[in-house]
Image (cartoon, rainbow, N blue to C red):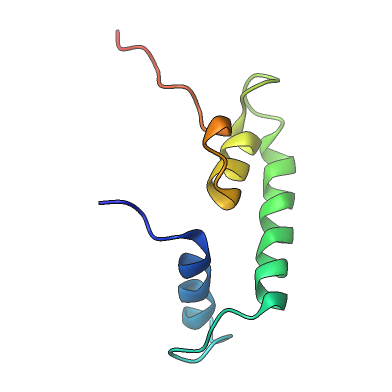
Length: 77
């Protein structure tokens, strides 16, 4: 089963945190805040992994829907 769009996931997190009421749409300011937090996390993740593939890239891939940044599958032993 595919995962819900990131905006839906962010809205649900905002509801759990008390920033949105049930059924209230995700405000652009909350989306911007989430994007800024994710960007900071990605900067931290840039320190882990290879220069061209790292945790920061994985965070960006998930948060911005960029499949090309997803980690390469690992070869099985």
